[in-house]
Length: 369
Image 1 (cartoon, rainbow, N blue to C red):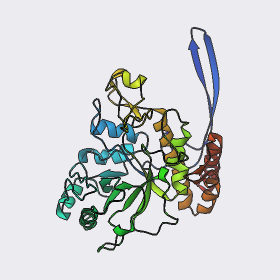
Image 2 (image 1 turned 180 degrees about the vertical axis):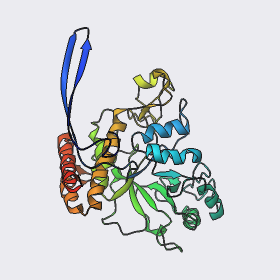
Image 3 (image 1 turned 135 degrees about the vertical axis):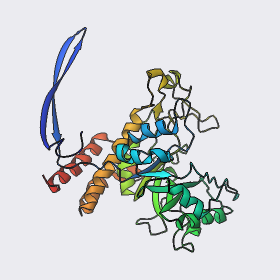
Image 4 (image 1 turned 90 degrees about the horizontal axis):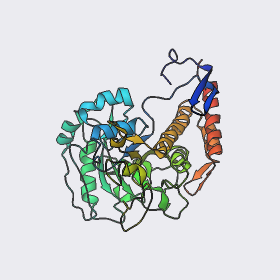
Protein backbone atom coordinates (compact mmCIF):
# COMPACT_ATOMS: atom_id res chain seq x y z
CA UNK A 1 0.00 0.00 0.00
CA UNK A 2 1.32 3.49 -0.80
CA UNK A 3 2.01 5.41 2.42
CA UNK A 4 -0.13 8.37 3.46
CA UNK A 5 -3.83 9.05 3.67
CA UNK A 6 -3.66 11.12 0.47
CA UNK A 7 -2.25 8.22 -1.51
CA UNK A 8 -4.39 5.55 0.17
CA UNK A 9 -7.61 6.98 1.65
CA UNK A 10 -9.35 4.57 4.03
CA UNK A 11 -12.39 2.76 2.75
CA UNK A 12 -13.52 -0.30 0.84
CA UNK A 13 -12.01 -0.91 -2.58
CA UNK A 14 -13.24 -3.39 -5.14
CA UNK A 15 -11.75 -4.80 -8.28
CA UNK A 16 -11.11 -8.02 -10.10
CA UNK A 17 -8.30 -10.28 -11.19
CA UNK A 18 -8.51 -11.84 -14.64
CA UNK A 19 -6.65 -15.06 -15.34
CA UNK A 20 -6.21 -16.45 -18.85
CA UNK A 21 -4.64 -19.80 -19.63
CA UNK A 22 -4.79 -22.39 -22.39
CA UNK A 23 -7.61 -24.05 -20.44
CA UNK A 24 -9.79 -20.93 -20.42
CA UNK A 25 -10.30 -17.67 -18.56
CA UNK A 26 -11.60 -16.73 -15.15
CA UNK A 27 -12.37 -13.46 -13.36
CA UNK A 28 -12.07 -13.31 -9.58
CA UNK A 29 -13.66 -10.44 -7.62
CA UNK A 30 -11.52 -8.73 -4.96
CA UNK A 31 -12.59 -6.59 -2.02
CA UNK A 32 -9.98 -4.72 0.03
CA UNK A 33 -10.66 -2.78 3.23
CA UNK A 34 -8.11 -0.06 3.98
CA UNK A 35 -8.10 1.02 7.62
CA UNK A 36 -7.39 4.58 8.74
CA UNK A 37 -3.99 3.90 10.28
CA UNK A 38 -0.66 2.79 8.88
CA UNK A 39 2.41 1.04 10.16
CA UNK A 40 5.63 3.06 10.47
CA UNK A 41 8.34 2.59 7.86
CA UNK A 42 10.79 1.76 10.67
CA UNK A 43 9.57 -1.23 12.71
CA UNK A 44 9.34 -0.77 16.48
CA UNK A 45 10.70 -4.27 17.00
CA UNK A 46 14.46 -4.50 16.55
CA UNK A 47 16.22 -7.35 14.78
CA UNK A 48 19.62 -8.67 13.85
CA UNK A 49 19.57 -11.19 11.05
CA UNK A 50 22.65 -13.15 9.92
CA UNK A 51 25.93 -13.27 11.81
CA UNK A 52 27.83 -14.61 8.81
CA UNK A 53 29.47 -12.85 5.87
CA UNK A 54 27.25 -12.76 2.77
CA UNK A 55 27.15 -15.97 0.75
CA UNK A 56 28.47 -16.10 -2.82
CA UNK A 57 25.93 -14.21 -4.91
CA UNK A 58 25.24 -11.69 -2.15
CA UNK A 59 26.98 -8.58 -0.87
CA UNK A 60 26.46 -6.86 2.47
CA UNK A 61 24.23 -4.37 0.65
CA UNK A 62 22.16 -6.82 -1.39
CA UNK A 63 21.71 -9.12 1.61
CA UNK A 64 20.68 -6.21 3.80
CA UNK A 65 18.16 -4.93 1.29
CA UNK A 66 16.58 -8.33 0.77
CA UNK A 67 16.14 -8.60 4.54
CA UNK A 68 14.90 -5.04 5.07
CA UNK A 69 12.19 -5.53 2.47
CA UNK A 70 10.84 -8.06 4.97
CA UNK A 71 11.26 -5.84 8.04
CA UNK A 72 14.40 -7.46 9.47
CA UNK A 73 17.85 -5.90 9.65
CA UNK A 74 21.20 -7.41 8.74
CA UNK A 75 24.12 -7.62 11.15
CA UNK A 76 25.47 -4.26 10.02
CA UNK A 77 24.83 -1.82 7.22
CA UNK A 78 27.39 -0.06 5.06
CA UNK A 79 27.70 3.47 6.52
CA UNK A 80 27.46 5.11 3.10
CA UNK A 81 24.07 3.46 2.55
CA UNK A 82 22.59 3.94 6.00
CA UNK A 83 20.78 7.25 5.44
CA UNK A 84 19.03 6.07 2.29
CA UNK A 85 18.22 2.74 3.92
CA UNK A 86 16.53 4.52 6.82
CA UNK A 87 14.35 6.43 4.37
CA UNK A 88 13.73 3.79 1.71
CA UNK A 89 13.86 0.51 3.63
CA UNK A 90 13.04 1.38 7.25
CA UNK A 91 16.48 0.60 8.72
CA UNK A 92 16.01 0.90 12.50
CA UNK A 93 19.39 -0.28 13.84
CA UNK A 94 22.84 -1.19 12.62
CA UNK A 95 26.00 -2.66 14.05
CA UNK A 96 29.45 -1.15 14.30
CA UNK A 97 30.87 -4.62 13.73
CA UNK A 98 31.95 -3.65 10.21
CA UNK A 99 34.52 -1.40 11.86
CA UNK A 100 35.45 -3.57 14.85
CA UNK A 101 34.74 -7.26 15.31
CA UNK A 102 34.63 -7.95 19.05
CA UNK A 103 34.40 -11.77 19.19
CA UNK A 104 34.73 -12.38 22.93
CA UNK A 105 35.32 -16.06 23.78
CA UNK A 106 34.50 -18.11 26.89
CA UNK A 107 38.15 -17.96 28.05
CA UNK A 108 38.13 -14.16 27.90
CA UNK A 109 40.08 -13.78 24.65
CA UNK A 110 38.74 -11.44 21.99
CA UNK A 111 39.42 -10.02 18.56
CA UNK A 112 39.22 -6.34 19.54
CA UNK A 113 38.07 -3.99 22.31
CA UNK A 114 37.76 -0.55 20.67
CA UNK A 115 38.27 2.51 22.82
CA UNK A 116 35.51 5.09 23.31
CA UNK A 117 37.24 7.43 20.86
CA UNK A 118 37.38 4.67 18.27
CA UNK A 119 33.70 3.93 18.85
CA UNK A 120 32.90 7.63 18.45
CA UNK A 121 34.74 7.72 15.13
CA UNK A 122 32.92 4.64 13.82
CA UNK A 123 29.51 5.87 14.99
CA UNK A 124 30.01 9.27 13.36
CA UNK A 125 29.77 7.58 9.95
CA UNK A 126 26.10 6.72 10.57
CA UNK A 127 23.12 9.09 10.54
CA UNK A 128 22.14 10.69 13.83
CA UNK A 129 19.26 8.95 15.55
CA UNK A 130 19.97 5.50 14.15
CA UNK A 131 20.41 2.91 16.90
CA UNK A 132 23.88 1.34 16.89
CA UNK A 133 25.24 -1.71 18.66
CA UNK A 134 28.03 -4.26 18.98
CA UNK A 135 27.46 -8.01 18.88
CA UNK A 136 29.90 -9.01 21.58
CA UNK A 137 29.78 -12.78 21.91
CA UNK A 138 27.99 -15.93 20.89
CA UNK A 139 26.42 -18.30 23.43
CA UNK A 140 28.80 -17.82 26.34
CA UNK A 141 26.82 -20.11 28.63
CA UNK A 142 28.40 -20.89 32.00
CA UNK A 143 31.46 -18.73 31.27
CA UNK A 144 33.08 -16.46 33.86
CA UNK A 145 36.48 -15.68 32.36
CA UNK A 146 34.74 -13.48 29.79
CA UNK A 147 33.47 -10.96 32.37
CA UNK A 148 36.44 -8.60 32.18
CA UNK A 149 36.26 -8.25 28.40
CA UNK A 150 32.44 -7.90 28.39
CA UNK A 151 32.57 -5.19 31.03
CA UNK A 152 35.39 -3.35 29.25
CA UNK A 153 33.57 -3.02 25.94
CA UNK A 154 30.33 -2.21 27.76
CA UNK A 155 31.99 0.65 29.60
CA UNK A 156 33.63 1.99 26.43
CA UNK A 157 30.40 1.79 24.42
CA UNK A 158 28.32 3.48 27.12
CA UNK A 159 30.79 6.37 27.34
CA UNK A 160 30.44 7.12 23.63
CA UNK A 161 29.06 10.45 22.42
CA UNK A 162 25.89 8.76 21.18
CA UNK A 163 24.11 5.71 22.48
CA UNK A 164 25.88 2.53 21.41
CA UNK A 165 24.50 -0.67 22.89
CA UNK A 166 25.91 -4.12 23.46
CA UNK A 167 24.36 -7.55 22.91
CA UNK A 168 25.15 -11.23 23.09
CA UNK A 169 23.30 -14.52 22.74
CA UNK A 170 23.01 -16.65 25.88
CA UNK A 171 20.63 -19.11 27.50
CA UNK A 172 19.89 -17.07 30.61
CA UNK A 173 20.46 -13.65 32.18
CA UNK A 174 23.72 -13.35 34.13
CA UNK A 175 23.32 -10.89 37.01
CA UNK A 176 27.12 -10.72 37.41
CA UNK A 177 27.04 -8.32 34.47
CA UNK A 178 24.47 -5.95 36.01
CA UNK A 179 25.15 -2.48 37.40
CA UNK A 180 28.58 -1.55 36.15
CA UNK A 181 30.34 1.62 37.18
CA UNK A 182 28.35 3.64 34.66
CA UNK A 183 25.11 2.51 36.28
CA UNK A 184 24.18 0.20 33.39
CA UNK A 185 24.46 -3.48 32.68
CA UNK A 186 27.45 -4.50 30.58
CA UNK A 187 24.85 -6.08 28.27
CA UNK A 188 22.09 -3.89 26.86
CA UNK A 189 20.32 -6.51 24.75
CA UNK A 190 20.11 -9.97 26.34
CA UNK A 191 19.39 -12.26 23.39
CA UNK A 192 17.97 -15.42 24.96
CA UNK A 193 17.45 -18.83 23.38
CA UNK A 194 13.73 -19.33 23.97
CA UNK A 195 13.77 -23.11 23.49
CA UNK A 196 15.79 -23.78 26.66
CA UNK A 197 13.06 -22.03 28.66
CA UNK A 198 15.24 -20.02 31.04
CA UNK A 199 13.38 -16.78 30.39
CA UNK A 200 13.44 -14.40 33.38
CA UNK A 201 10.37 -13.50 35.40
CA UNK A 202 8.38 -10.57 34.04
CA UNK A 203 8.47 -7.67 34.24
CA UNK A 204 12.23 -7.87 33.72
CA UNK A 205 13.90 -5.41 36.10
CA UNK A 206 17.55 -6.29 35.54
CA UNK A 207 19.87 -4.24 33.39
CA UNK A 208 19.14 -3.97 29.68
CA UNK A 209 16.26 -5.48 27.75
CA UNK A 210 15.28 -8.85 26.28
CA UNK A 211 15.44 -10.27 22.77
CA UNK A 212 14.61 -13.80 21.66
CA UNK A 213 16.35 -16.08 19.21
CA UNK A 214 16.06 -19.60 17.90
CA UNK A 215 18.87 -21.80 16.64
CA UNK A 216 19.95 -25.40 16.38
CA UNK A 217 18.77 -26.30 19.89
CA UNK A 218 15.18 -27.57 19.86
CA UNK A 219 15.08 -27.58 23.67
CA UNK A 220 12.06 -29.44 25.03
CA UNK A 221 10.36 -29.43 21.63
CA UNK A 222 7.52 -27.08 22.57
CA UNK A 223 9.02 -23.72 21.57
CA UNK A 224 8.60 -22.42 18.00
CA UNK A 225 10.90 -24.09 15.47
CA UNK A 226 11.76 -22.66 12.08
CA UNK A 227 12.45 -25.55 9.72
CA UNK A 228 10.72 -25.89 6.33
CA UNK A 229 8.65 -28.88 7.46
CA UNK A 230 7.07 -26.92 10.32
CA UNK A 231 4.02 -24.67 9.77
CA UNK A 232 5.02 -21.02 9.22
CA UNK A 233 3.01 -19.96 12.27
CA UNK A 234 6.16 -21.01 14.19
CA UNK A 235 8.13 -18.12 12.69
CA UNK A 236 5.29 -15.64 12.79
CA UNK A 237 4.16 -16.10 16.38
CA UNK A 238 7.67 -15.88 17.80
CA UNK A 239 8.52 -12.70 15.92
CA UNK A 240 5.13 -11.24 16.79
CA UNK A 241 2.77 -12.08 19.61
CA UNK A 242 5.10 -14.34 21.63
CA UNK A 243 7.86 -11.74 21.65
CA UNK A 244 5.28 -9.17 22.73
CA UNK A 245 3.79 -11.34 25.47
CA UNK A 246 7.23 -12.33 26.81
CA UNK A 247 8.49 -8.75 26.94
CA UNK A 248 11.05 -9.10 24.13
CA UNK A 249 11.91 -6.01 22.09
CA UNK A 250 13.97 -7.71 19.40
CA UNK A 251 14.60 -10.94 17.52
CA UNK A 252 17.84 -12.47 16.22
CA UNK A 253 18.66 -15.27 13.81
CA UNK A 254 22.12 -16.49 12.95
CA UNK A 255 21.98 -16.73 9.15
CA UNK A 256 19.64 -16.12 6.24
CA UNK A 257 21.59 -17.15 3.13
CA UNK A 258 23.32 -20.40 4.11
CA UNK A 259 22.75 -21.89 0.69
CA UNK A 260 23.28 -25.61 0.29
CA UNK A 261 24.66 -25.49 -3.28
CA UNK A 262 25.96 -21.95 -3.73
CA UNK A 263 24.40 -19.45 -6.11
CA UNK A 264 22.76 -22.20 -8.18
CA UNK A 265 19.39 -23.83 -8.73
CA UNK A 266 20.49 -26.61 -6.40
CA UNK A 267 20.04 -24.25 -3.48
CA UNK A 268 16.42 -23.76 -4.49
CA UNK A 269 15.79 -27.47 -4.86
CA UNK A 270 17.57 -28.73 -1.75
CA UNK A 271 17.44 -26.93 1.60
CA UNK A 272 18.19 -29.99 3.72
CA UNK A 273 21.30 -28.71 5.44
CA UNK A 274 23.52 -29.84 8.28
CA UNK A 275 24.67 -26.32 9.05
CA UNK A 276 24.26 -27.02 12.77
CA UNK A 277 27.12 -29.54 12.60
CA UNK A 278 27.44 -33.00 14.04
CA UNK A 279 25.47 -34.45 11.13
CA UNK A 280 22.31 -32.90 12.56
CA UNK A 281 19.85 -32.40 9.74
CA UNK A 282 17.50 -29.44 10.19
CA UNK A 283 15.86 -28.71 6.82
CA UNK A 284 16.08 -25.06 5.95
CA UNK A 285 18.01 -24.00 9.04
CA UNK A 286 19.97 -20.87 8.12
CA UNK A 287 18.19 -20.49 4.76
CA UNK A 288 15.49 -17.84 4.62
CA UNK A 289 16.61 -16.35 1.30
CA UNK A 290 17.29 -18.07 -2.02
CA UNK A 291 20.16 -17.21 -4.40
CA UNK A 292 19.63 -14.66 -7.17
CA UNK A 293 21.61 -16.36 -9.95
CA UNK A 294 18.99 -18.94 -11.04
CA UNK A 295 16.31 -16.23 -11.38
CA UNK A 296 18.59 -13.66 -13.07
CA UNK A 297 18.14 -11.21 -10.20
CA UNK A 298 20.55 -8.88 -8.42
CA UNK A 299 18.94 -9.62 -5.05
CA UNK A 300 18.23 -12.89 -3.29
CA UNK A 301 14.61 -13.96 -3.03
CA UNK A 302 12.63 -14.36 0.23
CA UNK A 303 11.12 -17.69 1.18
CA UNK A 304 7.67 -18.06 2.74
CA UNK A 305 9.21 -18.39 6.21
CA UNK A 306 10.80 -14.95 5.91
CA UNK A 307 7.39 -13.60 4.89
CA UNK A 308 6.00 -15.17 8.07
CA UNK A 309 8.68 -13.32 10.08
CA UNK A 310 7.65 -10.08 8.39
CA UNK A 311 4.00 -10.74 9.26
CA UNK A 312 4.99 -11.38 12.87
CA UNK A 313 6.92 -8.11 13.11
CA UNK A 314 3.84 -6.36 11.79
CA UNK A 315 1.67 -8.20 14.35
CA UNK A 316 4.02 -6.81 17.00
CA UNK A 317 3.58 -3.33 15.51
CA UNK A 318 -0.20 -3.47 15.95
CA UNK A 319 0.31 -4.14 19.68
CA UNK A 320 2.95 -1.42 19.96
CA UNK A 321 0.70 1.22 18.38
CA UNK A 322 -2.11 0.25 20.76
CA UNK A 323 0.29 0.57 23.69
CA UNK A 324 1.25 4.04 22.47
CA UNK A 325 -2.46 4.92 22.51
CA UNK A 326 -2.90 3.73 26.09
CA UNK A 327 -4.53 0.46 25.03
CA UNK A 328 -2.00 -2.03 26.41
CA UNK A 329 -4.67 -3.85 28.46
CA UNK A 330 -6.75 -4.43 25.34
CA UNK A 331 -3.71 -5.60 23.38
CA UNK A 332 -2.64 -8.02 26.10
CA UNK A 333 -6.12 -9.44 26.61
CA UNK A 334 -6.27 -10.21 22.90
CA UNK A 335 -2.75 -11.62 22.53
CA UNK A 336 -2.06 -13.58 25.70
CA UNK A 337 -4.74 -16.28 25.23
CA UNK A 338 -2.92 -17.46 22.08
CA UNK A 339 0.64 -16.53 23.12
CA UNK A 340 0.86 -17.33 26.81
CA UNK A 341 4.49 -18.44 27.00
CA UNK A 342 7.27 -20.04 24.95
CA UNK A 343 5.83 -23.47 25.79
CA UNK A 344 2.13 -22.56 25.64
CA UNK A 345 0.98 -20.97 22.39
CA UNK A 346 -1.67 -21.57 19.77
CA UNK A 347 -0.68 -23.45 16.62
CA UNK A 348 -3.91 -22.38 14.91
CA UNK A 349 -3.30 -19.76 12.20
CA UNK A 350 -6.96 -18.78 12.27
CA UNK A 351 -6.69 -17.85 15.95
CA UNK A 352 -3.65 -15.70 15.18
CA UNK A 353 -5.35 -13.98 12.24
CA UNK A 354 -8.44 -13.33 14.38
CA UNK A 355 -6.30 -11.72 17.09
CA UNK A 356 -4.66 -9.46 14.53
CA UNK A 357 -8.08 -8.57 13.12
CA UNK A 358 -9.28 -7.54 16.58
CA UNK A 359 -6.23 -5.35 17.11
CA UNK A 360 -6.69 -3.76 13.69
CA UNK A 361 -10.37 -3.06 14.25
CA UNK A 362 -9.56 -1.39 17.56
CA UNK A 363 -6.88 0.77 15.94
CA UNK A 364 -9.30 1.68 13.17
CA UNK A 365 -11.77 2.92 15.79
CA UNK A 366 -9.15 4.91 17.69
CA UNK A 367 -7.30 6.49 14.79
CA UNK A 368 -8.51 9.77 13.29
CA UNK A 369 -10.31 9.51 9.94
